[in-house]
View 1: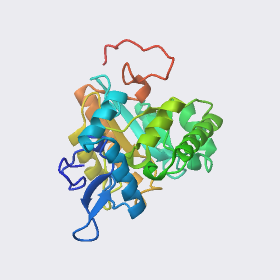
View 2: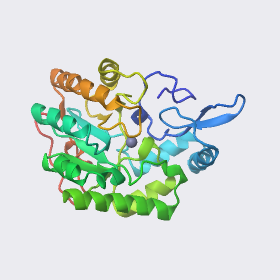
View 3: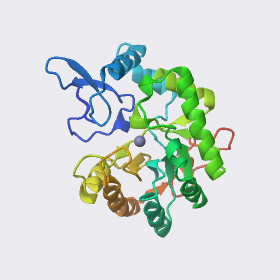
Length: 293
Ligand SMILES: [Zn+2]
C-alpha cells in the first residue's frame, strides 16, 4: 500500500506499515467522484463507502487521528515484536487443497506459525483445523465470515467473533486470543467487540500480495523480502477462497525463500505467541528475551 492518497498504486508499502488505512479514499470507477478502496485496491460499494467514511470520521481529523487512536489503544496492531523474531502468519484457511501442503513444508523446516482461520471454513474442515493445532501451530480467528467489518453493527460483530472463537475451540481444543480482521479493515465497532471478548487484534508489516492476478513464487518472494524486517509480522494466505484460484501456490512457492532469508539474516520465524512481551495470551506470564531474539 503506497503512502500517497491512493492506497494501491503499487509502491509496495505494506498495509501493516500504516495499518489503520484499510479503507481509503481514492479513484473510483466513476470519474470525478470519490470512491473508497480496501487494502487490495478494490472499490467498496456505496454502503461500505459510507461506513468507511464514518470510521474515518471517528478518528478526526482523518487518518492521522485514527492512527493516533489506534496507537493509544493497540500499540502492537501492526505486529511489531522482538527484533530477532519474525512472526509468520497465514490467513483464510483451513483449506483442504492447500493447508496440508503448508503444514508439510513447515514441519520439514521445523517452523511453527500462526494460522488465522475463518470460522465458516472450520465448519467445512474441522479435522484439518485440528491438524493445524496438533502440529503445534497457533490458531487465531479471521472472523466467522470473511466480510468487511465496516458494515457490521455491534451485535453482528460480537456474534461473528464469538461464533469463530467457539468453532476454533470445538475443532482444536484451544482458546484463540488473536484476531485479524478480514481485508485488514478495522472499525470502531470492531475494536469495541475485540476488546470486550479479550482478543488481541493484529495486522502485518510485510506481505506477499499473492492475491494479485498473475502472482508467482518469484513475485511473492520479492515482495515479501522487500518488506522483511526483524520484529515484523509476515502475512501469507494458505487458501485462495478470497483471491484468484491457485494464488496460494505462489505463496507456498515463496515460503522456502522467506525461510531461507530469515535464516541468512539470523531471524527466527515463529508464531505471534513467541513474538515478544505484548504477544502473550491474556493472563500468561511474559517470557524474557532469548538469546536468539
Ligand atoms: Zn483474509
